[in-house]
Image (tube, rainbow, N blue to C red; front, side, top):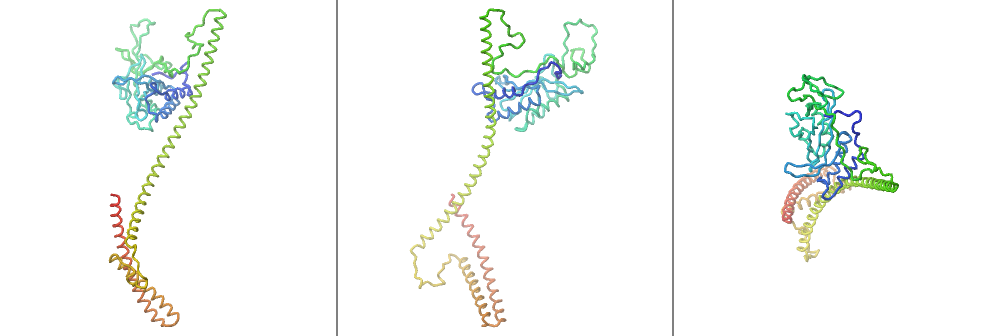
Length: 426
């Protein structure tokens, strides 16, 4: 484990450079494109940006991953350290989080990446001898709610309960051999050393591993050329010639390289701004696509309802046309028409309904005539009341019988219509 650097450690990654790097690698096309689904690249970018914001010690990069069957593929990874707290001291566990081809629908692969002076604890409940990590959060990965920030938080908790790495003590070549080494050296908090007794047989410390020489990997190199002035490590040596021609040529070359570098930087920033706008537009278009799909489904449902209504209208039109064809040409003289034969009933229910309706209307006319007679004084009032009571009783029976006949007719009509619809559809 690497304790947090307090002085002179690596500076935290620039969020803007991280976003630029992710935009570049996720927007590549052709043979060099990363094997992620196009509809999930925006979510992958969001997960990695959130991870680097919450855990600056983890930086995204691209590397070649070799599967068990020998296939090699270029994938994204988050390489660095995850902090953990053990016995009141904070340590850093070097890990590599590989984003597999099916990410984020499936969990990533997490490996503990020990340095040369570290070994993996055996046995460990969550880390196998090859460094592969298996924790409940990975096993219960749920798309799209699971993410890398929560994964790193769970890794810190699990490693804090049971550290997966131990430091392996190495002899100091500059020190003289001590015939009587102290098997229980006292811990040095200033160096973050391991605590607990050490094994005298294999010189292994039984506390959490600590390595002061582990350096967090950097973001992969960008697509722009290196600075012509060197990195300060001696990689660029200034020529010793003082010839004015050589000096002029060197200055001109440096100036041209600096101009090209500035142009490339400006173009890269412009392309990244365009890519950011395209990612935002893609999210808006995805929302509109969902709205359009919902509208299409509603229109399809409405169209099905209208088709059913159209079938009913066509069926009724066929019935009316058939009735017109049957009754076309039937003309009768009005003076030869018998009132009782003016309506032809097609069945007994219709005839019964006609009789009930005629009786009801006849009683209604009789009551009206009695009202006029009593107003004119043609009949006494007590006789009017007796007649009204008898007529009302008779009218009640006519109306009750008509209601029963109407209900029976409605049931028969519904059954007939259902049979006709089934025949029409088939």
